Length: 242
Image 1 (cartoon, rainbow, N blue to C red):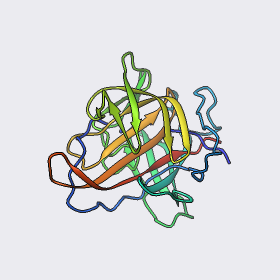
Image 2 (cartoon, helix red, strand yellow):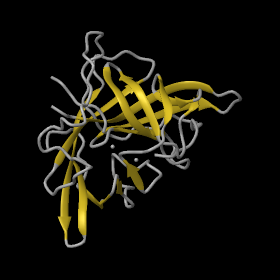
Image 3 (cartoon, rainbow, N blue to C red):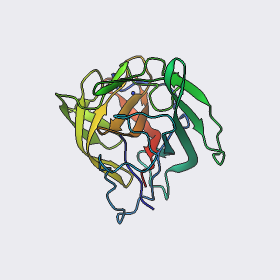
């Protein structure tokens, strides 16, 4: 079974110092097992799964599905999928376009539906009321740009991402050449981070048309200098693209 990778929320805080391990929220993306034989899953921008949300050309009725994953960064697991699927649908009323999020009927955790407005603009979308979104809630900017002119080189650091050897947070528009989440692989994607007040490092990974992943990283650490990391946990959502 093949799956697409993140095409669409972020400026954020540095690695948060948490006294106790945060309980991970149920979130997104389909991933296969962590086998070394897993094939690279690369979203081709021009090849969107029929009916998926195309953020460059939003239409009522478009619908994308995201598989939820969860794992401890330092542990090996047969699968990191929780079995929950997030369904995101473009709807409308007299006020304009909306995104609706809900978990599918077969999911173990029932979430939604929640609706929030989305406004398409040239080369970007505007999402202001996103606090209840599972995809965009941590993103710190009202605009998500799908064709940025300037980007910074971002690299993956196991469970989170770095810019110039520092944790990637803040307002920069990033470009990551390779992503590998427990065997799920993508390449040549845009990446943005979360707001400093959000107690997690969050990342949106996307291309010019689709949001591929919403990836969150949590850490439990001692309040020391330097930090002593006790455990690292990741959860998120992954776009189903075929």
